[in-house]
Image 1 (tube, rainbow, N blue to C red):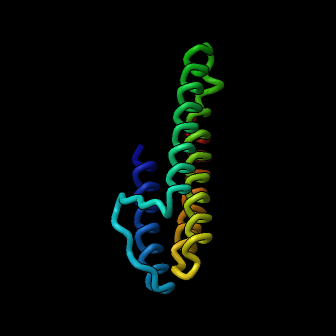
Image 2: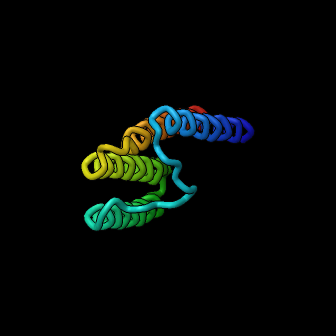
Length: 131
């Protein structure tokens, strides 16, 4: 468990410094923590649709996991969350690139999505090796 907290701490510190450096280098304005502004109404609709599909898939995966007597589907929720976060980041990147290409926000969003993807993959590999 201690390794998990170290791993998470390294990821958070890396994300904070990477964000500061990228925003300074690309001259991109700083965003507020936990704020999520949609680019336009299409982006809002696609984002909420993606969230609804992810929640529905999670619900179905919980039912499958509970109904099966073995633990062979225990990883399913993790995979669904990973795919959701990657798709959400790619959607945000595309919408920022399409509608605000002069701002360069999309570059920071894309790099954050890539870093998140690698972190999730490393975390998944760590979990598999632990159990």
